[in-house]
Image (cartoon, rainbow, N blue to C red; front, side):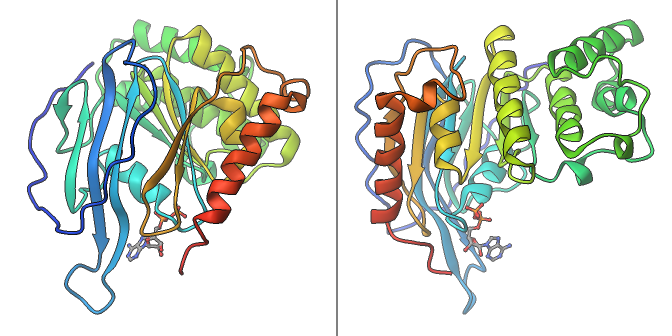
Length: 289
Ligand code: ADP
């Protein structure tokens, strides 16, 4: 399923940001994702030109859970769209498994905030999860096994024949996640996936994701504007400044797993990390527009 493609983003830009020092030890595994000095300008050459990404560099190793947090409008969605291959950055390179991408890499799957628009309302739950597998031409037996496993992983066994409208918002987002998992990507890219659900649903979706991540040995890049969520979930938190955005910190979260919504969040380590991220975001200012 792994796709390797190569083509450089060739444009260069003169106001390169200095990459931040990475004070983590040598990587234990090769980088699955390598983002190097990515800039993105909207409306290039027009009076509305705006630099959304201003020299973003970071890497994610296989098996890591990395969250990206930053103020609204700082460029998180722009960055994820570039990483997913849906959008081409103005300059810089993005490599998956060591190969620079030029189109949508097959082993990354994106989960959006807006689950209601990402599911097909006329298809039942199982058919929604099956859709990309059918599209990829997988044999029927393989597809049904993957659909059953993915639905079990997200806690939706028994709901296969329902339509999305018969499910709560949280359950619909579980279907969207099951669809991504069934495709078996090496990396899940998640763009504020829990921003539209209530706090309790959000907590249970966070724990479901941590459980699947650990059991299925996934790699996750999780974008959020919620500081608690970024720390609770991740091995590392990348903090983005307000736009034009840069990575202003790459913070290791050395809090033991499995984590617990109440106990972990009451530990001094969690409280200190949450405060550190909040301070960084506050001191970096708010988005200019
Ligand atoms: P975030 O996901 O952090 O809220 P976005 O990546 O959506 O931020 O947007 C970053 C900045 O780029 C914002 O200031 C936004 O207004 C601007 N922007 C996003 N999309 C476009 C576009 N298509 N054209 C012009 N500006 C855009």
